[in-house]
Image 1 (tube, rainbow, N blue to C red):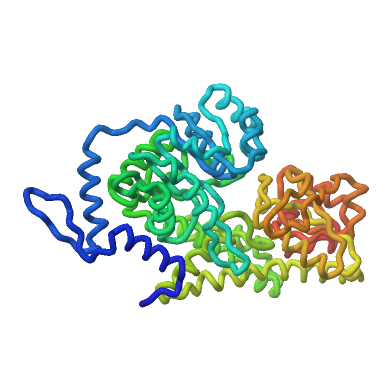
Image 2 (cartoon, helix red, strand yellow; image 1 turned 90 degrees about the vertical axis):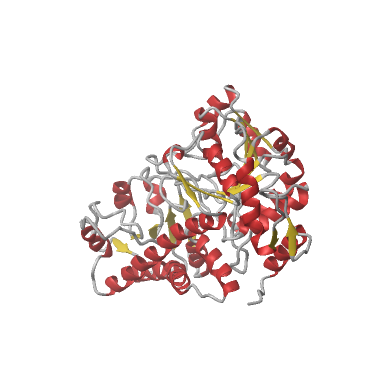
Length: 489
């Protein structure tokens, strides 16, 4: 079937060019003979060449570069630094590199003391200069992979990074992509820009692999070193070289057959979560109409010691994974004439949650004989999940806009986000500040909408101060409240 995807056409043309547009390729003599193979046999031939090369002395990995010092890249870089590897972190934001080189962290769950310790030890430094790649043995790419305004994959950050590092690649270097993406990104799209910009060939001159990030911000029990690392290489030799890199910092490695298998693994993990969250979100509405509390049902169901895993409803999906990653596969699957019905249905259910929550705010205010138009509504929690300062894709932004468009006067409180920094999707909220947490301030709102349940918030005080509370996180379940004060959404 002919693909209608222009990116794939481009990748195919580049791949054809790299094979000299020949139907047959003449390889080096093997056991005194010359073997002719078709282009479809090319990858297997490269693997054989590299397997032979891999039997030579192993190159020690002593210096690495981590590109993208955000919620994934910075913890990864520090883990390698703690493990005895010299790390240079590269980011295009000079304010980040400036802060890190002075031992200051800008991420809540990454302590400044930890950064400072590695900087002083000489194990970690940060830079905006991509020429640092000349001095490293491996490059780990941890850059954003958002959706564009048409809800299609945007891998421009990956490709831009590839073009930036390509001129500085050297023979034998290992390049690993960690950013979540669709199958084929590593061995088609990234490979093409790296080969074009470096004049080197992936699998022959340098090693290429994919290893999906599994960062869980705010979860103190999950340390980078303890989370198993899935790795897929372009060739068997690429896989071995990538394993040699990660084994310095990660306790358990999970090798898979290819880059595409590794890319697909990450997508499955997040699709699994998106579909199951959609299920409980839908059940929340269904059971609510029956007068049944879905939270009570989930708590009872999770006592089953087999065949059940609890997922919890909420006001919508947030973060860098679940709202975005499943649609990378939806988009890619169309090239192969396949539909992802479960993914798309889950997306519809989860995307509709903010509208349902607003409808519950309207019901709660109507119970007090107040209209939404003109009412003061406080959004409690701006981060996409509890105990983090990460507001990427947070459903609170959607709730803010829906409520504002309906005429409500909206403010927010988040103990970890005192002011809203610039974002790609919600630039009109830039500079908005978190309100104070005190009786006078909170009691001045007609309703408080709990969108993220941070442990740092006193919900007993909230019950005392707020006249009306709409709870999307079951945060008030054990808090004594007044009759008809709490509305679940």
